[in-house]
Length: 91
Image 1 (tube, rainbow, N blue to C red):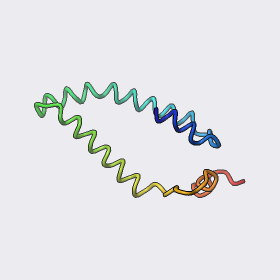
Image 2 (cartoon, rainbow, N blue to C red; image 1 turned 120 degrees about the vertical axis):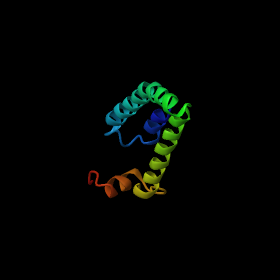
Image 3 (spheres, helix red, strand yellow; image 1 turned 45 degrees about the horizontal axis):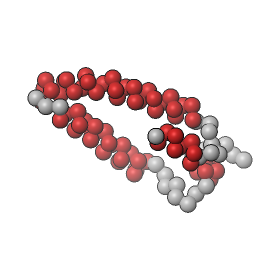
């Protein structure tokens, strides 16, 4: 449901919505298709499906580190100000 909330919370900027939605659904599809493959590999090599969840944990940790280090703070800023600071359209 996060993809639905995004459209409500940012009504002034819809330029990247199509790209965002496409990437989201492709990522969901890829996860659903790869989970059984990775699960069976983990079962064969480790004797348990725990490897799948450790892999997911590692991806989440890397995503958190990326978010903390690379993404700018946007608290108390308008969408237009954030867009200008990221190199968006100048008005």
